Image (cartoon, rainbow, N blue to C red; front, side):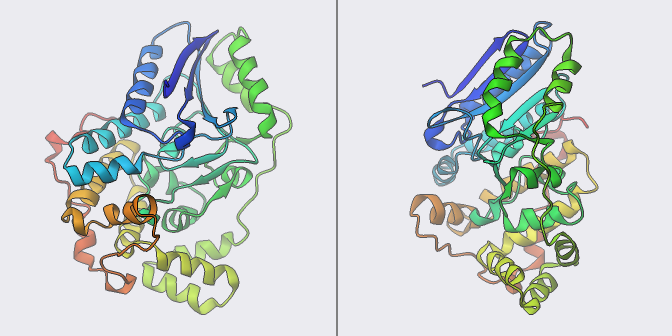
Length: 361
């Protein structure tokens, strides 16, 4: 089965992620296939715009992309496989290419959009979601951090929503994603197939008219703000995790207690790393953020021995043994050593040798 179907149809370069049984989770060959297609269309005068979608079990749409192939991460980490580093370097390069692409790139984010799926959609010039969209950056659940440019795009959400989404991995519905500035338009899922067919069959005059036509679709769903936005800003604007948890646990309302419970289940070490990541990224351009995240992901797998990596352990508990009982080190937020958090932000490469040294902007 071809996992990425890339064609020119009419004046549109179309990309369909075609790994439905894995919810289109990205493999290294998929990253390479997308990169090759985008580069080949960049200067092709026939291609006015690019459209990307996923395939569900019933056909096109229904699922976008559930992230990276975490089973591969686990296997490669244990084997010392260099392909693990290649995956992240090439994935982040693809993320950068999408953010800086010179032609409209339209992402149809139906169904699951998580992790790596956000990386290939947040840089789109038009981000379409539906009532079926389930959008999240849930990496702290597996002892990772919101990568693929997550520091960049989460830190630019309204208020302190970025900290909240990055730390908890909370899942947004389509209309909520629009309010969070993580999507541009929410449309009923039944409209996606006819829109796609019109895109590939219409003789658009230029790139701008393609983008304008998608954004002008009638019937858009109204954006929906998260109900406790002011409370999110108050809690997640606090200087560190300890007072955040104290405030949530002392508030006593259902939402606060559930949010505190979620944080208590995540990797304590990576929660501290994520808070620092998002706050640093707020002052960074995209390229610097991706370089920082490439450093962070290297440390996730290599700062400690594989047996002591929270990331490897988190993947084991969720996807390998599926016991959902990760043995985090340390096990409590209050016991995280600030010096260990700081080590994540020290690059393992001199700047002239960084794998993403040539990224601009």
